[in-house]
Image (cartoon, rainbow, N blue to C red):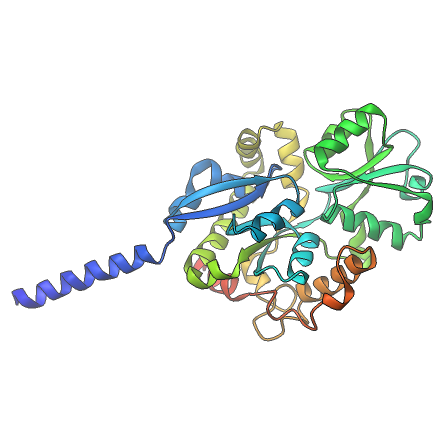
Length: 335
């Protein structure tokens, strides 16, 4: 009896050690400085607890920075735009898309000065955008679907903070950017001219996504699924009490509460269960023909058209670029 008990205790100890070994000591999570539901998990430490790991938060200014961090093996998971994520996949970075953190509606928008009242008014004007970003993609798409003469628009690639400075100097007439920079342009005499949601009727799905290093995900699959469950928990928390969530996020990122509320409310949030279907990441059997697969095809064509990537580098399918396994497991565990 004593021998059996000892064996059971030893097995339990081994299982505990294996469980801890399955969690990395540190998870490096990259995020932009803007308001997002994930900041709720940063504020209360719930992500560290759920992952059973210390979370190192790495802030970046744009999706291009996130790609650089992935290239130098400096981060494990990141939340950034679909356009730079597509570029990273085409350039063969060892990463994969594991979830949609939010569909961009009014979170990113074109802000114009007096005299720019609609999208057609940017002809003959100086318009700034953050390079290799969803904002650039949306701006170029808006120019295309509205049949504007691109040659009459002076397009200036500027990082968000640089854009605000250029606006205040009078160097630009309009800027397509996200919060809190969009609000900074608005508070300096600007007004909304166009929002990314206006492109949905033309078939453009522009979103922010969670991207992971493949090697990390393969080594710690449960950590990745747990990360996605926390995302859903924080989306639910935001929807239950938007004002409280906005106040917490605003304090965490150092933004006005109104700005955080505007940003969080400017995204649409598909659920974990929805994302594991053909409309989003697919169920594992129709990846390329899934909603995100089709979005990658459309985005990559756009990026090749503006010279951001080479057309010959675009893969024949997106089977290795999208992995819905983690989000489907997270959806089951969240039930």
